[in-house]
Image (cartoon, rainbow, N blue to C red; front, side, top):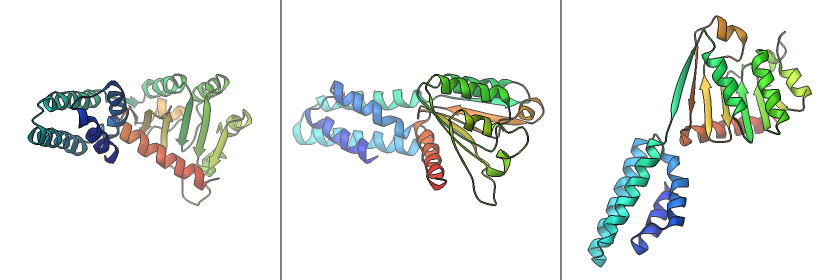
Amino acid sequence: MRQINELLRASLDDASVSRSERRELKGILPLIQGDRTGLAKTRQLAFNLATKKIQETGNYKAMEWLEDVIKLLYSSEMSVKASSYFSPGKDCLNRICRFISETKKRIDICVFTITDDRITQRIEEALSKGIDIRIISDNTKSEDRGSDLDRLRRTGIECRFDKTSAHMHHKFAISDNDLLLNGSYNWTRSASTENNENILVSNNAKLVQSFQKEFNRLWNSLS
């Protein structure tokens, strides 16, 4: 919020939103995607700034500035996308495989276990394309018969494991630091053929950053 406040105040100096300021705002506004309180506060701040500008200078161009800012606010809000998938069936499996295949630079995976060879194959294919991959998993489950974690480690993927008596029970992944996959779905064959499971895929920047922060925390704690 502080970044947005400072940028709005600087932008209002000449009562217009320049191209560079527009780019900066578009880069920052996703931080309040899905945050109705943050959106309302930013909208109110813009309104107050414009009103004060008019009162102090008589420059009604500040209203045009306000209109531009409001449009940017809501175009950012409308760009939030999310979709849900359920099993039994292949919907979750197919979406996970597509999530991995569509990654362009980096994917961070934090899952209880990986035993489904179809998912493992997509991870290996991503690695062959030069995708940076990090995996966190549960130490106990990694030793189960059918676990693909050793197979993935042998390919050169860095994997880190929980070292406590409790389970590392997360099931989420982050693609290119801008797309989140999360849900109850275990990356196993039984999850697609027998269990009632779900995943949610979203580009909500606030959620993505929250999960990325948690992944980084766990990764560093397991070094």
